[in-house]
Amino acid sequence: MKGGSISAMADPCLNGAYIVTEFQNVLSIAVQCTTPNEQERPNMEEVLQKLEETHILSLNFKSNCKNF
Image (cartoon, rainbow, N blue to C red; front, side, top):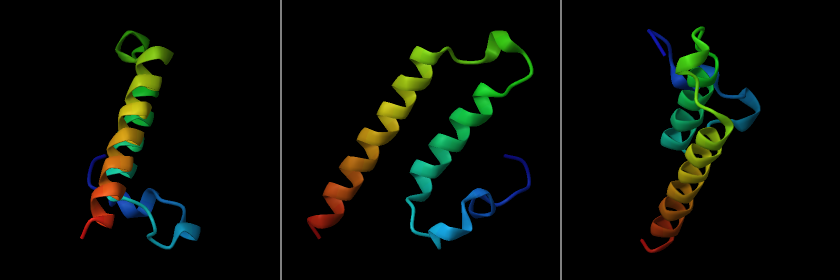
């Protein structure tokens, strides 16, 4: 994202209740899926893999936060 705020892209109803890095990953995937050159877009298998990786990272982060 160029020159903008990640938080400006989030649903205001979330009131900031999201993990920034997780949101950045999902936003990055969305941008990749909408690139004008279809050859540069990820296929659905790649999208699913990236979303699963983001979810796993999120679960690890949440788990580690409980240990403090």
